Image (cartoon, rainbow, N blue to C red; front, side, top):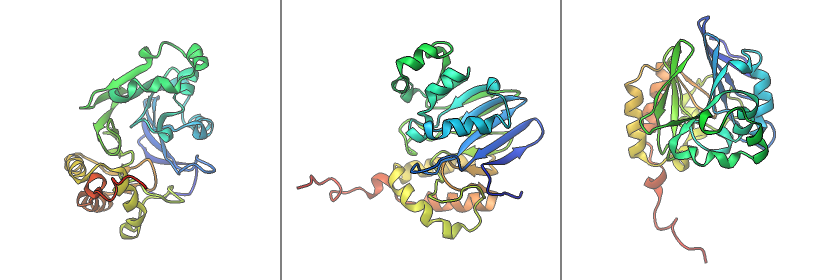
Length: 265
């Protein structure tokens, strides 16, 4: 598959089912972030749509592939600003339901101003799907999306989203990298490691959690791992290279000691 540096990249398209990635909508000081659209038989879901920096350009891009009236879900892997702070706009301007961990559901209303609450379509609770820790299948068109547990990677209530038709795991911050251009798939894994290492060492909980996650992913039928930041891992060679590397990575609490927990003078 040939990729060009454009605003959107079609990751999968069989005629009735599509997955589209948007890699260059964040402008200015914001960290690079990817947003995703899944369409099945004209019904649509947006994954990790971001905040005000991305809302307008993202909706403009979405309109090239679908109508906002076809949007059934806005799915949030976790609660960070680059994930879901645009939530009030989606509640007001679409009829989509918000999908998020039950641990963060009670906090999300803090994003919603009284002005937005008065204008939204339906009550907040009617528009919310709270994910239990074990995850679940979420119907979309004639298919479904699987909310896959990824807790503490890096949020305490964290999910990734698996598309069984495209065989894509949208992995959130797992596999994330700090790059200027995320529009092309990864080619040289070894040179890519420095772009991932520091982020994973600080933002992931510890190696035990990573090993549990790697074991789960190895049991799944995955042909792409597509993180929320940076380049995608496409094909079994690149996927296995990433899983082999991250499986042995010491990170988070593994690296903490008394030198960190010292009261500043």
